[in-house]
Image (cartoon, rainbow, N blue to C red; front, side, top):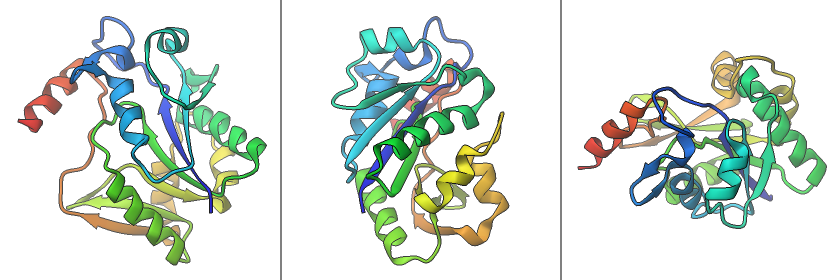
Length: 197
């Protein structure tokens, strides 16, 4: 099994002076923080799908030894970004497992991803999601048997919606902490720092 991590950095957010992903965060930028965490995961490839401000992010952010893909149709919604990323994985033709997270979700942990991947290997279900206390969250693990379903989605459809509609496809792994929160507004960054203290 070869595992690819996919970081979706394709939503602009609101209330930011510039690119949400280049916003200063904990001594770095938001996208650099998330990507550095993903590089701690037990994966074979880190792919970043970029949407708004892609050129600025490529010029200004340290994205490590990642594969960068640009989604020219990012304004359509998450479905377009998934299509671009998974099409790239199909072309590479060497990966069979995907770990998906948004580029505005700092706080992921490699040991939790390892537990989810181990569950994926032993489970007969194609997807594994983390359940943080009483809420499911991200990152999620998706086996290649579901990739064709993901790339057939359109518009604002998301992987969360697909898995919620098919609970028989999903295995849950429980973690005793709060879920990783997405940064959708400038105020969300303030809230994250407050939670950290």
